[in-house]
Image (cartoon, rainbow, N blue to C red; front, top):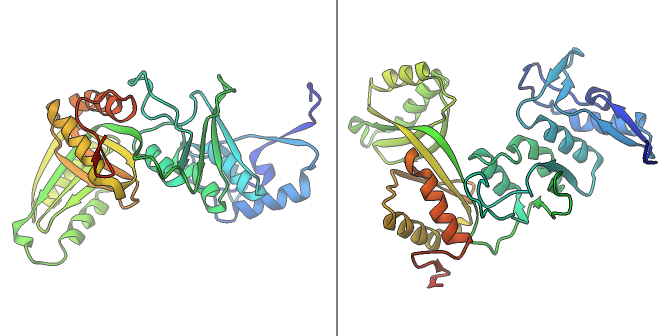
Length: 330
C-alpha cells in the first residue's frame, strides 16, 4: 500500500486452505483447490494484491493446523493452481536449483530449466530448495514454478515445468548422508513366491520406510533413512531373521545423479571410471522407476570426494577420465 499497490492481508483459512488433523504435518484436503477458487471468486477484490499467510490452515472443525516441511511453498502452489496463474514464483536464498550443494561444491552452477519429476527427485534425495509435496498442486495443474533468489533478484532462477531440458546428460548431483544399508538374504526362498511380500510385511509392521532398493531372487538390499528409530530397526532385524540373514552396514550415503536414464550407459561409464580412479567403492546401485535418477550407495566418509570429483568431471570440464556421450569419447 505504501508504494501505491493496493494490498490486503489474509490468513490462509480465509482464502479456503483446508487440511486434515495431523498437527505439525497437516496435508491439504482434496477439496482445497476448489475451496480456494471459491473464496477468491467471492471474497477477494481482483484489483487488490492478496497477501496470504503460508504454512497454516484450518481443519474441518475450524481449528488452526500447521503444514509440514515446505508448507509455505505448498500454500503458494495451491493458490496458484486454484487461480490458474501463468507462473508461481518461490523466493529462496540461492539462485534457483544448483548442480550440487554450494556449501560443498564452490563451483556449483544454476540449472535454468528442470522438469517436475527431476525437481521432486532432487528434493527427495537431499536438495533443500523445494519439497516434493509443495510441487504437487502445480504439477497437477500444469503450472510452471520459478525459483528465484531474494538476495539476488536479477538472477534468472530455475524454471520447473513438465518439460525440463532433455538435451542434458546430467542435471545435478545430490546426496543423503548417514544412512544405513540393510542386506537381506534367504536361500530358503529360492524359487518360492512371497519373499518380497514377507519382507515388506515386516517393514510395515515396524513402521520402517525405505529410500533405495535393489533385489535379486533370494536377496534384497535397502537403505534406511537416518530419521528411522534405532529401536525400530533392531525389531525389524529380529523379525526378518526368522526367515533370512540380515546384515546392517552403517555410516553409508546415497549419491544420486539426476539424469536421463535412457543415456545411463554413457553416464555409468563416466561415473565408474571416475570412482575407480579415486578408489571409491560402490556397494549398491539403483535406477529409479521415475527414469530420471541413478543412485549409488557408498561409504559416508567418501561422499564429499565422490561429489567433488563427479561435479568437476560432469560440469566443470575438469575430468581425469574419458567422458562418454552418445557412445563417443568427448
